[in-house]
Length: 179
Ligand code: IMP
Ligand code: MG
Image 1 (tube, protein in one colour):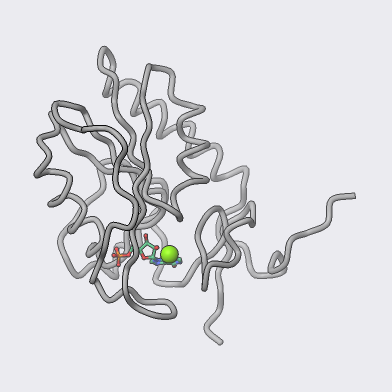
Image 2 (cartoon, rainbow, N blue to C red; image 1 turned 90 degrees about the vertical axis):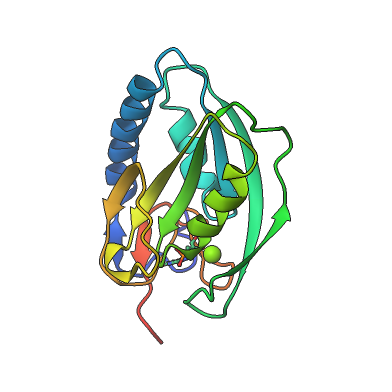
């Protein structure tokens, strides 16, 4: 019998089947848009690793992958916007069609920082795929080129997303009510 992981009694916002279906659509869009090219997918750790793993398995053209890790200062459920790269890319992105893969776009501060840093390394193109978009929370005007779901201003966990590093292992995306 499958034992439900801790926290799986939290209300479900998006279940695994819905997430998978939407990722199939995103991957089809990406495969079509990058036809004839080999996009370089850059996953932002740790939150995007589950999304990245599912996304690449639905992409039907050649692609390469890399990861970077960032730490954003801020506690609890809000990011301060101060971002630091704690694990850099392994290979150069110069001349590459870079597609950044993010778990969630919230205030836009993290991606605003990343696009500046990555843009300075001379990619042929730079785009963003975000599984979730909390559109109403945006502080910096950032839009993702591929968006899985626009969600309301609620804190979510699961499918890679954490609260205090926990809940990443939940298969569905859950709403974590404020304590
Ligand atoms: P931004 O810099 O405000 O756009 O925030 C992006 C980052 O904040 C994401 O990559 C997440 O790590 C984190 N984040 C924002 N909202 C949530 C949420 O609802 N659950 C978990 N992490 C979140
Ligand atoms: Mg996080």
